Length: 471
Image (cartoon, rainbow, N blue to C red; front, side, top):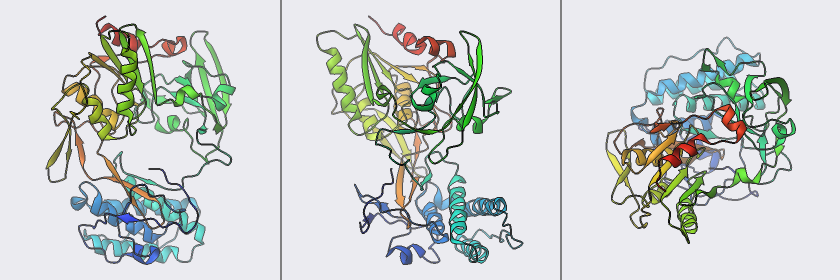
């Protein structure tokens, strides 16, 4: 969900209040924002007012929301959340040269209400005399740490969303490149896969350029990724520290260094297209889908119909590489073009009860052999699709393992300062009831990308896919 600002006075309607397993000691959100529940969901189509300060009351509201709305919140040991929050709080005090002798974690008993009261009492005693901007920063890092303690890829707190001055809707911010892995799962070598524009294009980078170091740090140590080094390639506004890259161009053997300063840029329009099509062979359709946005399933089906006009298709390559997910309903609708009457996934509550998700059988069957291209950029709803294809034997997966980031469909909850806490209330299981979160979906044919292929404009995964289809 994107947080946007509007003119003063806009009222945000909230629905679906939720309560924690233990009744809250107080509801500071009520006093702060005119009656908001501890864990409210935005009304359909609601736009949030401007963000206000994060306070200890907002931290409490988020704590109660997690206990009441998060999958497994009723059984969660809340002491782990408070300990993580207090650790971040003291680290921030220390970083700012303001560590205090009384900054000691209170004893926690496991009683959620009593533990919060003890936590809050120490927190307020330590912060009441501090300047407002420092109190704001301490509350922010505390809440960030509480959410991070869930260690859930679909739990996040969205706040402080800002755009560079003068930016337009299609502008992006950063270094202007995509690379071959993410901070958690990259494997060597790390190389440029796409030059989107901006600083990377101005510096003359090309697909296939191997990144040997990032601001002096190797991206791998003994073959194990260094997350901070890879993450530095993806700065977000207002981060503007220059990033120095040491590069190798394999086809020439050239080694050189370049410094890229993050900034706004207008990317190559082709890189922004949500759906692209081609005919790699006259009888095989290729469709690339970058996300399961609303209406994406019907757009894919219309694209296939256009490619099918005037020719006989013998197969379909559906490219889901870099598809970050989206709507489970769109996944089920698109799967309905390949099978009817099938369970595509399960959404399970903490008590073990599960609801089946099913193919949309109102969609006409395509009757085409299917190959799906996957990589570590295929996440969330994309993994829902890939796991269903694999488990239901609807086609073959070619490429590399998916992201393993599909803990469960997340719901937004609005906090009193008009920020959004997103939490999954159920856990996702594949059609065979296996867990794919943190694991990913393995391809049937492992075809990893290489720097030389990227430099030459070759697509070995697509080439492999075409060998699996008739015609």
